[in-house]
Amino acid sequence: MIRMQLQIDLTYEVNTGGADFVFNVHAAKTARQTVVEEHLSLSQDVNHAVDTDPVNGTRYLRLHAEPGDLALSYTATLDLDHYRDDPKTISETSVCDMPASALDYIFPSRYCQSDRLLQFAQNEFGAMPRGYSRVLAIQAWVQKHVTFTSNSSTFTTSAVDTLIERVGVCRDFAHLMIALCRAVNIPARLATGTDYGADPALGPPDFHAYVEVFLGKRWYIFDASGTGIPLGFVRFGTGRDAADVAFASMFGSVNSHAPTIKTEAVDDPKRGMEVPQHCDDAVSTDAGGLTRG
Image (cartoon, rainbow, N blue to C red):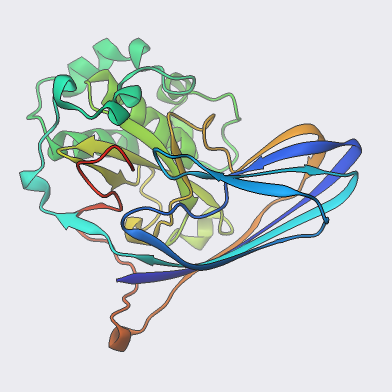
């Protein structure tokens, strides 16, 4: 088992008129990701609500902030009990056999225009054996042909833009991998978390975008940018692309400051707790075979 300790601090300046916020910083509760304890602190005494998506477990914090400073602090302790499998045994699932909850993730979306990449994906990956290995090949192609460069994209950058420009950050790698998977009829979705295990040279700890792909009977984790250690990823939310799972959406005039994030793994072998490391297994925090993610 892996136990993760997480702290997120966000600060904003809310201008005249106030602003509404939707945050996606609460750790999701899944079959294999257990929230042991958590605490939310807000600097403003305002009403707030946390709603959970009944299908994928994504939790959304909503509030209206008054003009002035707003600080949010979220801490959590989580246990990750990953499902692990041999990649060689994992097949693709035909469209007619997919659960209804996976069907949304084979279609194009705002940032993952898989319909524009059909011929390209077919030429590159169409003749490959179907299964986990083909998804690994798509991930490897993205990592080989796109260079991780901080501040190289904007909130409008799409998978097609990244394919053309060949630079990006984690969400751009993820969008391109998702679009290429969907273009060969493999359901893929964006997952958000924190960048556990990333090289400090890439910058301070930050939010992280990675990929979950539906194969066989469950969603498996892939780190499209290859910058982190997947066994240490704490899932916040999943969606078609970044438009669905931004860590903060603001409706009003707001000045934002860079987030402060701290993620640590508990190293306590006597209690069965191990530090996340890279592995060759296929890993998932999904229940498997169900509509819930």
